[in-house]
Length: 327
Image (cartoon, rainbow, N blue to C red):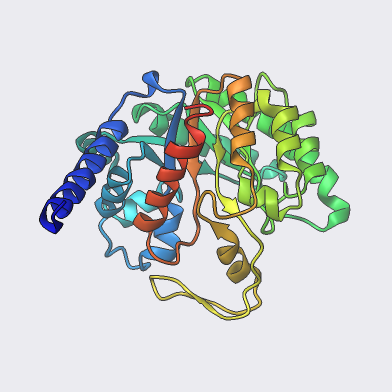
């Protein structure tokens, strides 16, 4: 085979691969069990400067080109305001690319009863927005972490509120689920996750775990998925491997996390799917067992090369390793 013919075949294969990814991204969710998203947090925290100069559509182009289905919006509603992307325009730009809004990150001091009316008012607006965008999922982050002696009481108050929040979301046809975090939030460790699940009603409030935070929280991830797979309404797949930050971590937007800090180390612990220590094939078997249908977010917080490089690698891993298990 001549070099010219080999080059032509290589280019043709690449073009067909790109086309397949675009077709896959545009496939209606009803034809698949799992839809794949990324979080806009990667761009707003490590890729784009804080001056609003970035083009929101650049992120959407990467998501489309990597063969993914949509994204989770963080910083609602401020992010859309900063990047001049009103809902009507966002809906148009998503439609042009065959993408969807998966969910949004929602928080608030749920452990403070005095804050509940304000959070409920915000939740109504968030759910109205999600419904208008065709999403049925609210991802709920836990509040700030108190001293250890107060965790149980703060968690009790938060869980009572989260049950009511689940009821509120349900009036809009939206499911709400708790997203764990390992960097100073109320729900971090395995016992806290299990207590949250015990104190919330499965019929009212679900579970939306994040694997990198489970890993760094010292959790037995397969055990939690196998025991509580029936509570899953969504999840984040991020591979993880502990890498201590001996040097500063500089992100694409010029921000610097100093060596030895928790955020610098957390950044380095984020790994592309298949590069870390989490058994995603085992987790996927749990999803198959429970016939899970919904969104998985590849919630990278740091990509050493570029978002497109990491998400292309993750999409290849999904296609080769996970979809044969359950797709």
